[in-house]
Length: 410
Image 1 (tube, helix red, strand yellow):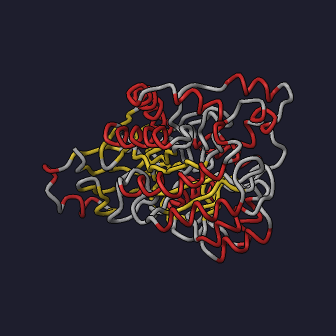
Image 2 (spheres, rainbow, N blue to C red):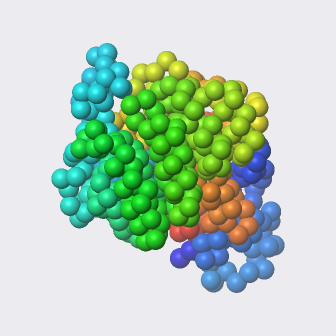
Image 3 (cartoon, rainbow, N blue to C red):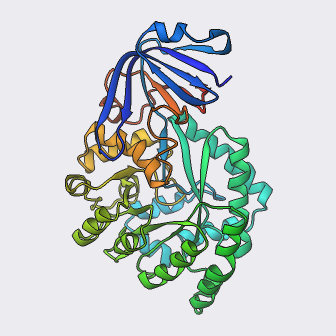
């Protein structure tokens, strides 16, 4: 039943759109949810008694805290095998680029994924994605990008579409055919780019297999000019756009995100002051994922304080992937962000909820607790939200409500 009343809520935290770190906090209240949508936030029993209770299930929050479900707006959950050997190589002193140049990195995942059938890829990915729910993630971006042929990229997107029908979590599909240059095109990258622009992007858009198109702009991957061509083609086919930018070098990717009006620019360890100003001016989300910096042993992290203090809107994501951040837990990412980005608990929770929703273009549907929004909610055994980043590696999620349905009951 997705007609429920959640009563005896101790505290309810509702993030305010466009105001990073600001929440409406209500105490001793109840939520009325009809057909999976928030209908009313009640302050007393009178409003509850005015409705026909026989049509509703009752869920007692027992004085615990209710927050929006986490929105993880940058993730790569569709892949074949782990790359734990590369974790060992990095810890022995090899850099990200050195591992990639020796045949590891994205190309490693590409070789393994191409060997799998759609059915095999679906089976292992469904199990993996369902684990995100345990940590409170109710909406998860899912990128392609480990196929790097027309057929293998479509295979990945079809798997995402199938899982979306089977899993309780909502997946938001993103086409990342420009994740790397395939090995077979290393001497003729223009041919691969031509295929992306003229074949795969139009097909993905026509078949509605993705909502957005992404690209990895970085040394040894894609240039800003190639990004402009690919993403302009994506926009021309009706797809939203986003960019992996400024992760390992300051490369101009974030300026391009501002120029194209992207949903977000992601990573941003080496973003320039000019790019920060231009992204703010064009309302592009700064999608931060310091778990990647932490996991690959970088000394530099995104300049979150500068971004927020200037008025930038931020999202927090896991960047879950087999090579550079094997982490499903947004609460753990919040801990890393508190320590290394010096963000407050309010900023962290804002970025992991409404900020993530905005990075996906879904801030009017999810990410906050408001009338007419989806009832994607977490019941947490906490008194204050500062306990979430403080409780490093612990899972404080007691109940997960997705589209008005109780799907996790710890």
